[in-house]
Structure formats: C-alpha cells, structure tokens
Length: 207
Image (cartoon, rainbow, N blue to C red; front, top):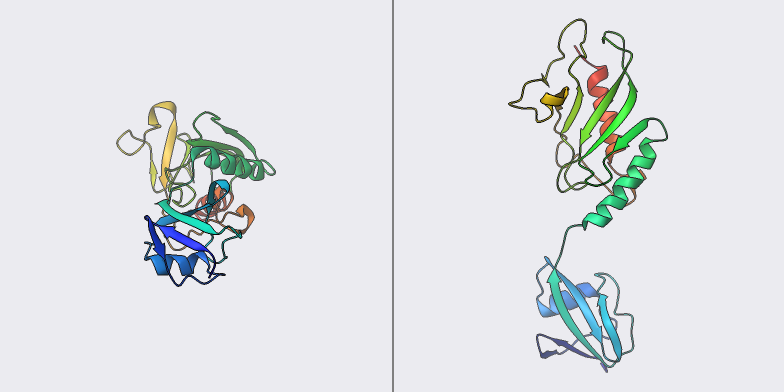
C-alpha cells in the first residue's frame, strides 16, 4: 500500500489500504481499553479512529497513538441530565440543583389508595457513574404512611439515611446490572424516566 502507518515510532507493514480501526488494533496488538488516535501528515490535530471504518484521508503517512478510554465528562453528563429533566417535566413539576446535579426532586407524583396523601414528592439520588450506574435510592417525606403504618423498607433514621435530618425517608431499590440498559438515545434506553416508573411501581404495589 502507499500509506505509511507508524505506531510507537515503528513502521507497521502489511496494512490494507481500507483497513478499519479494528484491523489496525489487531495488527498493532493494541489493548481494547485504549482508544486509538490518528495524526495525518499535513493535517494538524488528532482524529479518533473508528473501529469499523477506514481512516478517512489520503495522507501518505499516518501516526497512530493511543490514550485510555474515559468516562463521560461532567459537562456531558450535565447535558444528558438536563435532557432527562426536560422529559420528566412533561408530566411533573421538577426541581434540581443546577450546580451539582446530585438529586432531582419530582413533585406531585400520584399515589394509590391507602396512602396518607394523594400525591407525594420523590427525591432521586443520582449516583456517581450515572447513567452507566443505575440509581438505587429515592426519598419520600417521613410523614407518609400506608394504611396507617410506615411503609416497608422505608428508612427514617440517620444510620441508613443521609437526608434524615431534613425530613426525608430513604428507600432502596436495586435494578439488576444487566437489566439496566441506558442508551445515548435517551428515549431508547433506561434513564431517570424509567427509574421513576420503577419507583411508582414499587409504591403502587405495597402489601
């Protein structure tokens, strides 16, 4: 081929002209946890090599470098959460801390018969690593009862509940890891919208 591919200062031989990122990874024995970058002769800057696409240039020389894959940056996470908040706000009034995004409060969530009130506010804790990591905790006001009693799995005291002092009771739900499937396309995967559906299912099926 006419293209020269360099990696770690060495020329890589037998590289097909239309080699994909996956082909390059195999030829150079690059670990799967490293992201490949390409620097093209005569073109400043780095190009992120796509696993299933050939390099998009006719440059005679290509230098391949690798960097660790990384989690979504905080600004990207903020953008995703804001989109999820917009979806939630179609049906509910919501409040959130636009500095930290650690919690989102969803107001006027309807409750089934048997509860001490017709509507409630639900506070969802957004975990580190979201959306890859599923939420596991939500909070209701301590005053809420079901058929005159404290609902099961409702933690009011300080030992399990970091928000006890400001009047919130904590519930824990644990979506199974393989069952929680977020997507870059929010409407096609799990999100705070589907987690709220889970919360409502838990609350609606008290026994």
